[in-house]
Length: 502
Image 1 (cartoon, rainbow, N blue to C red):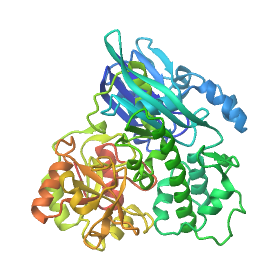
Image 2 (cartoon, rainbow, N blue to C red; image 1 turned 45 degrees about the horizontal axis):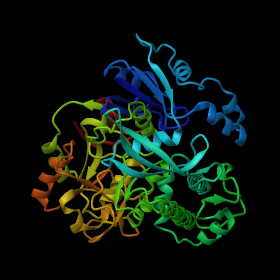
Image 3 (tube, one colour; image 1 turned 30 degrees about the vertical axis):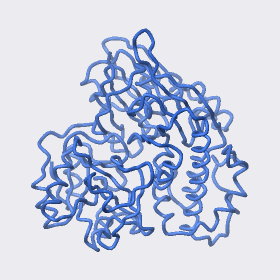
Image 4 (spheres, rainbow, N blue to C red; image 1 turned 45 degrees about the vertical axis):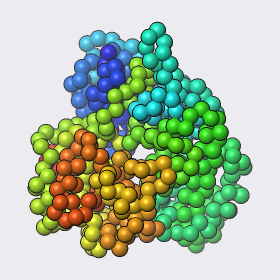
């Protein structure tokens, strides 16, 4: 049975297609519309989804009516009284009125946090796990802890979820971090990752002030005020250093996340952790997770877009056959290993757009801008190409078997295939392009069975240079999402003068 999962209406819309336990397709709406963080499903992504067959069921990632009660409470009256999104059927009609199916599917609406939980647990290798969700806000929930396991019902293994603990709006770690993002002049719900990068340059001068001013109870993750409206102007001096604000916000967020993980571990449900929600994208905070759980799974798309896959999985209730994150639009052809090697040895920087696009916010080898990590000038050149702030760090992609030689991986993370945790670089002077100011790198490890040709490229690069890693960042035009098609890659070449091979 083909099932669609949809997350949309707020930000980062996505659509996933599964057939039983097989993931046929999963992609971001923004890659088709070129509107970054596009909140709506459009004809482009709908058309590609239909190539895999018409759905028998369509599952939406949250419950619109319940969400509207929270919007009323929060004073978001325009959103609360809009009726275009009260059901997934009505939503699709409003955003794509010409869209029609030959057969009428069944329609389902899931809990926002349960969609996150299913995306985490049902893609994981675990048969039993503690599931933790931390984000800005769902319908009402902001933190959830579930005990998840597969149980045999009528001879069929079925995913089940037992709620263990929840925190509700307006108490939210995610809203705190988003408010701090806005406070330093960055775009909320977009540039939180920049705030995380800024933290490495600052001192946590205001961490205690934040804790005293905003946090009522660290163990319960309760706040003294609703930060949905932002940070009050008089929190710190007008001349406060933005990097110190970032470092302080990061320190407080990490402390609060650690309290949630302590609580989750204390239930004793499982030593396996499946972690999701937008806050799970905080790579610096993730390095502490191994203190609380023995085995850790973070799917590569833990934000709302990934919940499209969770919403579909909640209908089938099966453990998904997770084969990796390359689930989107396909650019056909063999991975251009030799062309990339030639360009790397001459130009030092090159793009690749090949195979199926990554499902998640990070380029993992199929829509990547790659560079030699050893040159002292490379970081500035790549930042110049992408027109980013010069302080922004880049990630290394490395052959999995070499990671322990070059990086001190945190407890619980012997590997990091989806670039989800920071690690200390043992030889920062040798690889200045991929080491942040604090000596860490956001590592991506590539196993031998990787479904991207990035593995073969790294093997050949290592043979030629004795360097088992490359700098890896997303292939995108400034202000736009990652390249999706060959036509997008051509636009990137024209805009930046960097060759992109397919």
